[in-house]
Length: 563
Image 1 (cartoon, rainbow, N blue to C red):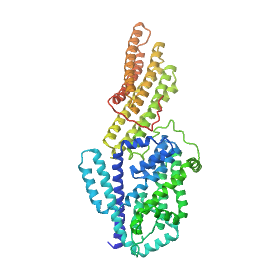
Image 2: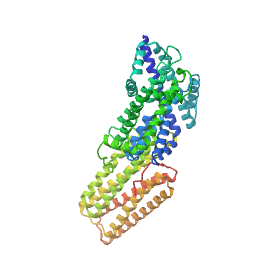
Image 3: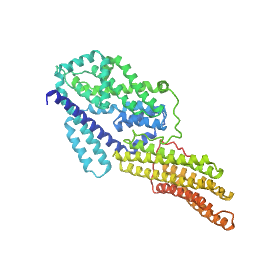
Image 4: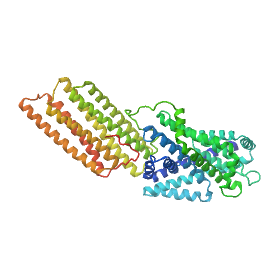
C-alpha cells in the first residue's frame, strides 16, 4: 500500500471510529437521560424562548442536531407541534450541536485510553442499567477521541503537501469557495460534528513557522459556515413524504442556516477578530481548535438571537417556499407513526400513544355506525362500520411493526421496555375490540337480512350499552395517558354495569320468547350484539387493570382527542 492510499484509508478509518464513538455516546446519553428527555419535550409548548432552550438541551443530550431536527419534523407532521414551535426548537438545536466542537477542543489526549478503559468496565461489567448507560457514554466519548487522534496523526504530513497548500491558498482568497467546501464535506459525511472535527484537526497542524496554524481562523470560518449549510440536507431528506408543515420546518432550518452563513461570510475578518478576543490567548496552533469551537457557538447563538423575534416572518417565508393548504389528516390512519423515530424511543412512544388515541376515536366511530345500523336498518352505516374495522386492523399491524422496530433498535432502557410492552398490550386490546365489533357487524347484517325487529325496550338498553362501552373506551385510554387510577376504577365499575345489562337483557329476552313476543330466530344476532359489548368492556378492563397495577405512560405532548 503506497503512502497516499495509506493516508486516505487511515483518514477515513479515523473518521469512521469518530462517528462510531459519537453514535455510542449519543445512545448512552439518550438512555441515561430517559424521562428527562420526556420532560424537556413537555415544555416545548410554552413559548419560543422555551422552545430554543428545549432544542438546545435535546441536541446536547442526543449529540446530534440532525436527530433533534428529524424528531421535530416527526412531531410537526403528527400535529403534536405547531410550525412556530418547531422553528424555535430547530433554532435551539443549532446551538446545542456546538457542544460537540467545544468538547473536542479540550486537550485530553493523554487521558483518552483511561476514559476508554473506565467506560468499558462500566459498560460491559456493571449490572445496574444507569451505570451501564454512563459507561457506554464514556466509552463512546473515548472512542470518539481515538478517532480524532487517528485523524490528527495522519494529517501531519499535509503541512508539507503542495496540493493542500494550494487549496488553502484558494480558500483564503475566496471565502465562498471555503463555504462550498464545507457544504460538500458535510453532505458527503452526513455529520456536521464529524466535519467540524476534521476541520479542527486540519487547523491544529502547524505551518512552516511551527507557531501559526496551517489553516488559520479566517480560512476555517468559511468552511465552518458551509458546514452549517450542509447539515440542513438531512432535514430536507427526512421531510420527504411528510406533511406540508414538516416540509416548512425543514425549509426553516435551511433558511436559518443559509441566511446566517451568507451574513457572516462578508464579515469574516471582523468576526475572526471578535472570536480571538473571546478565546484563550496563546500560539495560534495551540488555541485554534477552541477558536473554531467558539466561532461555531457564537455564530449559532447570534443567528438565533437575530431570528428569534422574527419567527413570524420565518413562518411567512417558509409558507411562501412551501405553498398550499395543509393536508387534512383527521381521518388518516396511521396518522402519527414516523419511521424516522424508532431510534428516539421517548419521541417514538409518544407518537405510538397518540396513534392509540387516534385509533380509539375510529373504534368509537365504528360503534356509532353499528348503533345507527341497528336502530335505523341503515345498510350504508353497516358498510362504513366494516370499512372502519378493516382500517383499525390495518393500523394495529402498522403499530406492532413500529414497536418491533423500536425494540430491535436496542436503545430502550428497562423502564422504557416496560412502557413499550404495556403499549403493545394496549394495542392488542384495541385490535380485539375491533374484532369484537366486526363480529357485532356480522350479527347486525344477519338482523337486517332477516328483517328482525327488536322491541323498543331492547333497543333502549342496547343504545344505553353502546353509550356505556364508548365511554369506557375513552376512559380507559385517558387513564392510560395520565396514570389516573380513579378513572381506571370508573372503567372497572362500567364493566360491572355492562355485565348486569347483558344478564338483564338475556333474562328479558327469554321472558319475551316464553310469551311469544319474540322469535327464537332473533336470539343469535341479539346475543352476539350483547356479548360483543361485554367482550369490548373486558378489553377496556384489561387496560384499566394495568393502570391500577401502576402502568403509567404519561405523554406531556399528547392532545386528548377523546371526549
